[in-house]
Length: 232
Length: 219
Image (cartoon, rainbow over all chains, first blue to last red; front, side, top):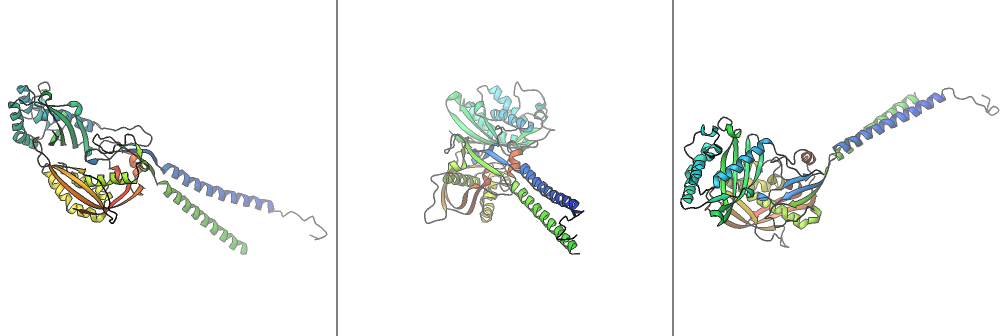
């Protein structure tokens, strides 16, 4: 090269390929960084949770708060077969426990203390024979016979009648309810003497399961039942 | 030689940049697990005296109403008893109201005192309900909220002639409350998506609020 006489310098022969390599290098690094960022954003999008509305019902029994709706879904409560079965068992049992009919034969059948577990296998739904015995465990039936039945018989002998209003029955779970059973809270209104009075009651029932002795109710039976009069 | 050294440092810079971007992506990932929850309140119980009638936001209810609801909730949880021997155990679980809404000292005090009494009542088929018995207020010269309450105790079950025993009392509560949702390690979003509406299987939503009882005295 004869500078400054000769301005026509030769092009650096490797210049083009170096420039391409550099451009590609910068491009690859940029693409790599963008992909890393996008991965982060993707994870962020997947894991983000925005819950609105989030509806909380308050003021239940013992001021129990409960989520009734989260997100944009329809408010629903999912119940399993086990829960439905337990609830239905309690719906019938609560009426059998409290009702005092003017028909003494019907009362005697429901309160029958001469039952055996074999009686519970027969289809006596029509007569409701042994209805209390077949729904409860031995210990609770002993308490029923000793404490509650004498009161019922005294009321019956003095002409008192009691009727649980089926529409007033409310049966809610307390804590977890599983296939093995659970604890439930029951509230109801009882009409006395054909409408000449009423009282509200609250009861807690513990349901347990023993498929051998209680096959008719898929093994579910009431192990504990404690009721209280909360108003006159 | 110099060129090789420059290339080496350039490689180092590139590595450092990559690490920095990974760090940033991780930070974004952490941000991603933070959940935004917008609670509304809807009171369905007929006995409720504070029924708003339609779902309302926490911010619309106001700080005072929210604090009172949470105090009422806590006082109920502190005293109520039902004839279920497993109830006290459930009330001391890791997601329970007593554990999440009490300072450790208050929780210990409850476990050693009231909880033993509640357990004994549960085993003896007794029931106790709780109601707030007047205005909840804080005297200007005190850090403690004055909470009057009334307890109705049924000492015998399955006897419809039994009247409840009525006990009046007052709690003095030093309460920490700030509006908003607690930043918590609970995976509330996952719970809400999957199991909030499963009948019976739930934790109490009261625990997600920024509320804690720091000290408590009975009068």
